[in-house]
Image (cartoon, rainbow, N blue to C red; front, side):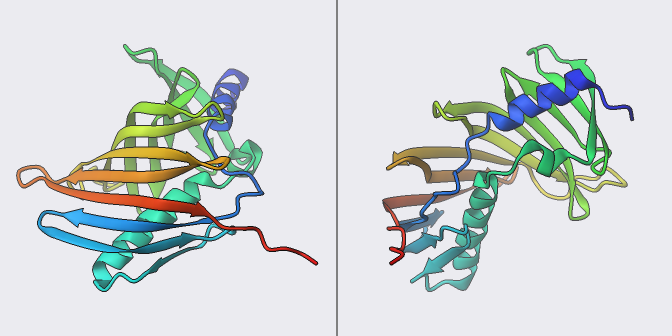
Length: 217
């Protein structure tokens, strides 16, 4: 697939418009509350300056792993990498423009088969091959931080890349953030999943405190 400069620059602009943490990010601690149905668990979390994460004082191991998984996913998306680091081995070409004005961008090269949609300088659809499955994420609203955008409401669904078979029920997400010091930190993620027996999981983070940078003598 030939690289089209217009498609590459459209993708670059949206990519660089994402909100990420800078190299001075100090990390933070927070209290966490996990709710699902009648179940409630509490504990503490720590996100380190290198974006490794820890979950403390959560007795239920499965819940602990779920909280850990969400924090790791959040941290991965806050990593600041240049467009060329992430997409340097990909090519981009323009696809169709849908009724909302979102422009489809088709990917070739290293990530051939992936595709995105860009609208208003934001990536509003991601269709990627990851770890043997295809994940499709549609974003419906976003937070404008003034320093880049953060997804607010979105959904995700997984399919088998060969058969197209749906691998799990669709999940619907809502993320909310608070500015703590110079950084926007997730305060709540609500996930609704399932179809007939819809299940809601609420991860809430409070008492958020930035870590103090180590003093170098």
